[in-house]
Length: 316
Image 1: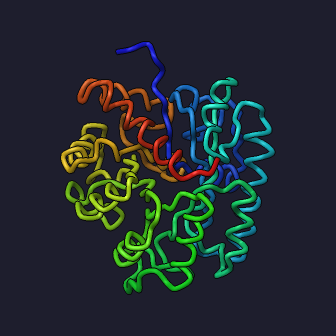
Image 2 (image 1 turned 180 degrees about the vertical axis):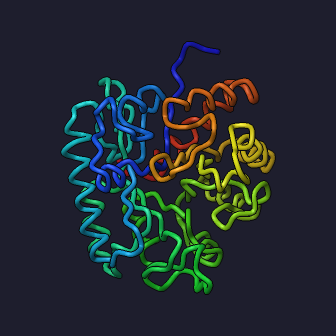
């Protein structure tokens, strides 16, 4: 293996949600966060997506208030701690790394907070949000999630949101989106599309996983799927990296070498893989990728593919 450091990007983690809900501190050594600062360092993560998530029991207006609180916490504590800098435009990741900092990128999980008002989307962009998942499992003003009985696809407003995100330079995320909404979005997208945290439905039939046709469609946009460590999306019962590798194998067999990344969903899950319990275990997965596929493919999956997508979407 070469001496050059492997760039590592994790496209989905609910660190801010747990900090807000449980009063946890990002820089405390004894924090039980899956991805506190020390564990991000142990994982070797250069860029971490920090997700803004609020439970669906809250109204869209309440979710917006909670998201704003998490953005303040990100700026005051995570960035304010002096060791992580935000990624707001193309080139920020490289600049942060050159200056000795790790990076964070804000992402919304479920666009309920937009409340059918593009001005809120613009405001979130100005506050540093650079990615958004259209839905969580339920429906909202943009589309229906994969947990709804009726799937109406993208709403007219949802189509406006996708077009505006493409114009602004925001990453469009289809994780949790219903099937019809997925295909509606693929039809109109003018930039690469990601599924930040999902696995292959062919390997494990779960509504949150993607079919082979969906995976190929993401590849065609130039986007990617972030392989996720959520046990219920990996397999049945107790699961490990062995089970996760079956999903990696399948995505690669479909032609996904340039379209596979990582979306751990750490801190958004209570149960973990037996050998991927938190960020400190990520080197276990990296080593397995290296031994199985070689250095070039490992580096693409660990962060190279995600960087390409980010660079193709974010503005200068």
